[in-house]
Length: 490
Image (tube, rainbow, N blue to C red):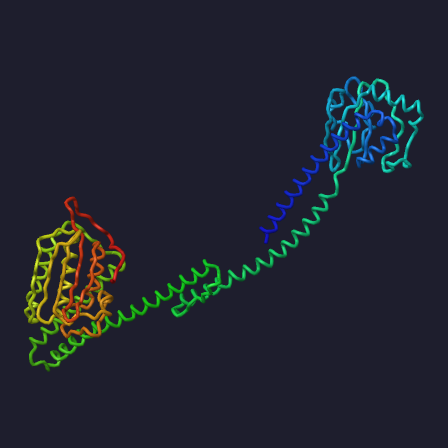
């Protein structure tokens, strides 16, 4: 409101000043023209009655004739109109060769024009001879003009001039009153509109503030009501808050599911360890060597699960370092896969490595080996008879493909296989291989190295995990990264 009131005051004051200045300039120009006309009519000036009619017809407030001596000084300053001072008049304009001039004092505007003194003397003499130069007063048509006597040319006068005045109209004051009225009406309208706009804007903001407070207190079901007729920016804000709440709710659900899955995976080996340890302690175990072997196996499972959890925590905290360098994909993948030969034999599976040349890719050798190991572990968990590790040269890089002849993955489950501890309802395995977090780690590491990973599962033809990595190029050199690219779970 203060801004509106200030703007109205500045605009109104400026308008009034401009109007006043324009009126003053126009009035001064008119008075100059009228002063020249009166000065040219010297005989009329000499007769008070006619002069009064001049003043009245021109709607002048006051008019008089002044005389100057040889030093261009006004002989009788008291003869000037009350609103005009001698110092305001340019004496050079009162010379016979001068031109009309003018000025203003307060709300009074005046004009001065030189008169032919010889002609004026002749006119005064003629008026005296005919007897028309008698005093005049309120009975003349110019009744509002001050009482005047016949003009007498003083001794020593060398020049003369007519001085006329007019007060500015009261239009500026009237305009000021109308302006104040208009400003008051405008202010009332502005207050009403401002109050309406304020309510329209603050209502959704208050609703947003209330919803965000509930979200901060843990109520992830809170939503901001969205009205399409609201200001677009407020609608966008409400949608953003609602999207954030939905994302938090989804994240919290995934976190709960993740914790439940981790708890289940931790409980299974712990149960085995606890059972066999109590059997050994009670002397109930008939085959202590077998019991110790089971305890060692389950302990290794726990160790691997904890290590994978710590690795995922590092990935989430962006405290994971990579050393990218030209790497022989076939050599790393083949060496890593061969290390799972004994495990494949134990499970009665065939593990085959099929390299297609030795493509160089830009990757971290250790992390690339970890990617291969996790994919092979996952394939061993579901394969029916064989697992094949293939390296192929493709456009702009190379592909690592790990395939199995297991039951495959349903189409609805394919987008989720790289989520942490995701379990497909139609793809169940009784083999305890890996921690259940391997594919999630694969997605994180491959994305961090600038590659991509996806799953393919033709119906009845097993599963293929395909990793694409960038070609190293002839000028590639080793580089280090202190943190990975943004997390991807696709």
